[in-house]
Image (cartoon, rainbow, N blue to C red):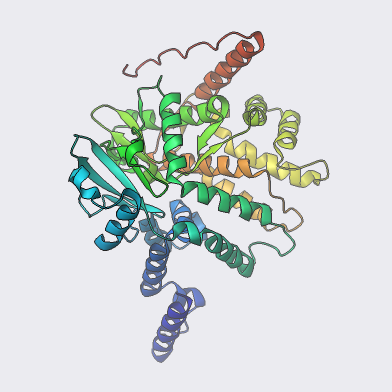
Length: 441
């Protein structure tokens, strides 16, 4: 890819100099031909390399030219599918010879293709309508080299100083990606979330079909719907409700489940306009938190809503964003970012995600802090996965231009947590969650 891009830059530079122009380096690099080459290469590489492109594409703001951001955006849904012969080979290795006899129909054209696998809709002879996710061969073996290559790219770019030890973060990234590539583990997460959300019919979790699932193949019930991104033209009330449900789910994952689906890709959510249900499609990036992990965030939220900077400092120390040795102005910069990020919690009434510049201000503050080499600190890895999910939710809320009373949802979540804590301390069974008004039962 680097050779091809460099060759294109040279040719374009010669052409423009011949016309009497003096192009900048960016003008030579960000040509349509080069952008297509970069996107196509990432799509072919799949795995961690493509995941990086997907994350960057969600919202890079001013960090990327709009042309590159738009083309990288295709990576969220335009991975290169496997040819039919390869699909047959993978299924034969996992299901055995004659596997076709179990199916009434099995189209070899996938209905979706992503960074780790592709999905086929199939009907079994016993009447099941299934979504079959098939992992690309070699993805699991390439994880270590993919992550190391991304780290090398960041080092060479100067974005990460040589003195910063990111080895623990790389180890955790590889571990998480290997778990995402284990479809038996994802099947367990699928069943776990289905049980945890049994009291919430506004969500749909596909049923797991263990008889057809292996480490490389995941069989689920097919659930219809439209991409949640496509609801941008829906009535305001419907867009508000979608984001309200997702914010409530985030709070339950953090404070109640100690379990969170941390992949922010918009393609992981569907929506059924007929039933008004949110469809949760992918649980590969599910992460279990240690009991009590959410307590630091509970304290941070309470302090932020109260405007108590001293209490926010104590919460930041407890979470691990800085320690007692961190310079006061660096602590203040981190707390300023928290206040920005938690702005929706402090605003009574509906917070308008469609008009806020919060994401831009957070990015600018983060870049400013990141450029200060005296403050390079990796917080606990669990917090990074939580932020990954939270950032994706903010971006989706902004995309849908939702207006949501986040403060009310936070207070409800904190109150529910207090009730559970009291019940656990007394030895009583936690109270059942009451039905939420306005949702079908």
